[in-house]
Image (cartoon, rainbow, N blue to C red; front, top):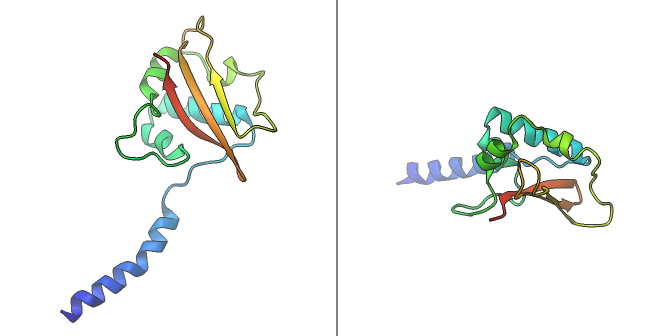
Length: 129
């Protein structure tokens, strides 16, 4: 029974290191950098990369924050960074929602960012029904 106790103690000592090495979401200071990141991840179909970028972290069975494939399909060859080239993160707000015009080929999509002390984080990509 002592060996089990020793294994539990050794295993518990590694947990903080594992948590520190877990992927952390990236904070952005420029909207163009955030959109370039989203474009890159959509092109690579890296759904895990996009999921790990969400802040706060995505919870199991959470809906309507991860409409990656829909945005990729509707975006086609367009680049978000080019569509929203004239926009910037607001200086005084803590949330920022990009509403894609209904006339655009990706109409009905929304990209939401939230601000923290470190910068702006991707919060959700979803489709308005």
